[in-house]
Length: 63
Image (cartoon, rainbow, N blue to C red; front, side):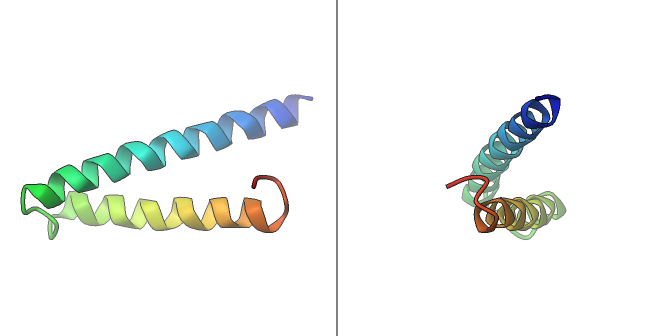
């Protein structure tokens, strides 16, 4: 049961972090800072989160 709880917590954290960073990217883009290091870091993180979530879908862990 601990593994399931840990997975659910990790999944929730990934989704929250992805949403937060997406919002920050929109703010940076609106401010014309879409070439900044921060924006690019968020972009890289977003790619990682998407890859992780896609793997979870692939293995039937999430829909």
